[in-house]
Length: 293
Image (cartoon, one colour):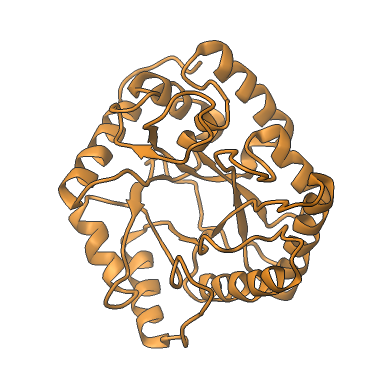
């Protein structure tokens, strides 16, 4: 089956942010332009509910055409309730239905993929949840040709399945290293989960883990600072340079050659003006000469 990731041969690094689709999917284009994006991410349905909307094919076509005309990578982010490793049969079934809708919509929109959190064990062993998550991923990808799932590392709170790259490797193993299974790195989540990306030693350890799982699997990077300290287990994003990570560590990671193919999506707090300012900061960071470390 063909892989529908958009070509990544361009030397220009695509940078953007998560945008609202209130008022119609195609509104994402205007929101992206207002913020100075050349990549966007959006929710395919209500981010805090199970219900999925009836497909609006006209709006989907407008958005799909718009991102192609602009040359923007498009990412979708599945709703927060989705838990592909859930032991509760009802939650698991709802997760499959909801993520399936997101994947099908992603194919119609020619999105790079659908970002989904790793999920939670919720009272059973992590090994059982990892196995269920891996099997669910394979079933969905095989059922929906051309779809792509991008698993996002989480902040590590509660009984979550994967907060580090090494833990994520277990999910990939359970999914038999499916070729259309990718990674979404989130800098805030890594830091909150205890990965010390603010130090050179921590970044070296992370880079070694990334080499093991395959940096080519990283299809998008969520660039966020963190409101809380290392290992806080709290998923609270901060504006770039205004949190506990800081600009320099982010700049070092974004300079890694093995990750330069991945578009950068910001999920920082603020209005359109502040989002645009953060995007401009990241553009400055990647354009400045910095030794990767």
